[in-house]
Length: 259
Ligand code: G3P
Ligand code: MG
Image (cartoon, rainbow, N blue to C red):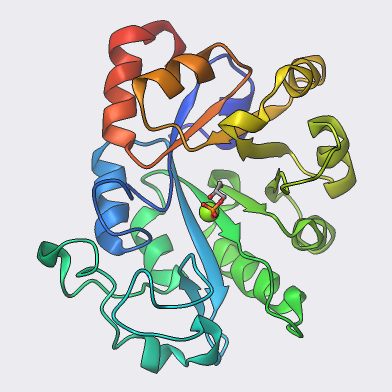
């Protein structure tokens, strides 16, 4: 498996499965991670946050309601409570029984198979963000996955903390809506190795800046042939998609020299 630094140094694009293969399975569940690996994704993104008893869980929203049969704030529940909610049936009855994974379960499955993008969700009001950063980095270190893990966040302070406290971590600053700075300015201020934004945020000035500074840029979410065509004309290195199998197939068919 190529490390992220090896990917960064050539002209190839890589397919990043957004919340796993979230277009074909319930997001951020083990089923979605399995489908992403089977699809041949080079990198699998998961979102992480903390339960009330400080277990690192794989989950996107602040509340349980959209993607589980539970309700209320995720961070107000212990992991024992979260473990009882169903995270699959909302998507399709055949996924009934999927649970909210611990990050450790996700890493034990993904480690050694693919590169992992851990998106550290912003801390809750009053939370000491350094704790979630420390827990996550500790898990990666224990497993020796530093070279194959990219940490991303909208909360750039978390990325700065990672760089300060843990050597050799790869980070990506996610563009915050309304932030007028160019990608190079964002990356510099966050001391990050890469930049992530939505496809429409790669406007001409941003694209010029990404090229001029040779920035590793990931863009989300690229799900259709039209979006892929647009992305392939831009300095985008990681194609972040809910449909990794579809995008991998399109790349193989139409952009074989870029994969
Ligand atoms: O990494 C890109 C993307 O995951 C950021 O937004 O809300 O899907 O986690 P979100
Ligand atoms: Mg995310």
